[in-house]
Length: 282
Image 1 (cartoon, rainbow, N blue to C red):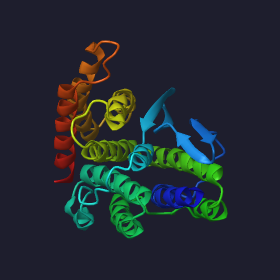
Image 2 (spheres, helix red, strand yellow):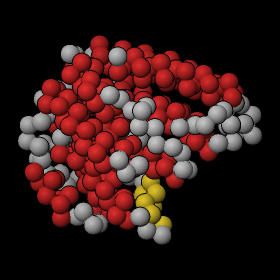
Image 3 (cartoon, rainbow, N blue to C red):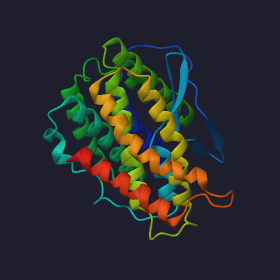
Image 4 (cartoon, helix red, strand yellow):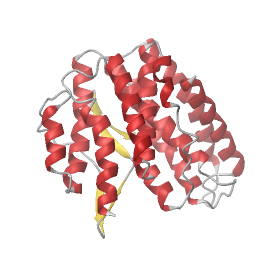
């Protein structure tokens, strides 16, 4: 189990730290929620990013994928994004969104042990990072930290938190804070899309459907972060897209205390998420 987790985290760190971070060293302590139980790493699927004095819990897909794999759901390698389409995105908005999507697919393939596919997604995401201008100063210091701590899960988690902070700091310094928001949206939508596709039939007692319902709160945090980020046309358009999904999630508030989500609500959420994901990749 420990070795599997090391491979998973290393793959995800490579794409988030080696590509996004800029070789800057930070001593700031990032907040995160992590519990170590019986050598298994259990963590809530969010990172914390501070913006304008407000801390937002931003969703990441990795915990969803670990949960999916533990439920023995099938590996849906035919549902991930086509790695050969990385050069189909001419705008910075589409490049950033699909960078996030490819990063989520990389994590998904890693969790299921398909490391050949993981390498393909690493290359696709790296190509988009180059197009976005995020490839300069690949972060040699953090790469060395990963190499030295590959057998230490706690240290790797700390490095992961550092990478998000550095990415945010770098993009903010470059006047491109909206790019990080778009990357986070792409990763979130792909993580939710693959979770929805992993549900076998509409059985409301399926624990994966409950995890999908939990994304309601994380979506609210993601929208809050985007609304307080750089005001740009790209961000405004994405906010509008996510608000359409938020509307169907908001229906969950009207359920009675014994009902987390209904069949109709799950179908409506699924339709909105699948539609938006397909819009972003095409």
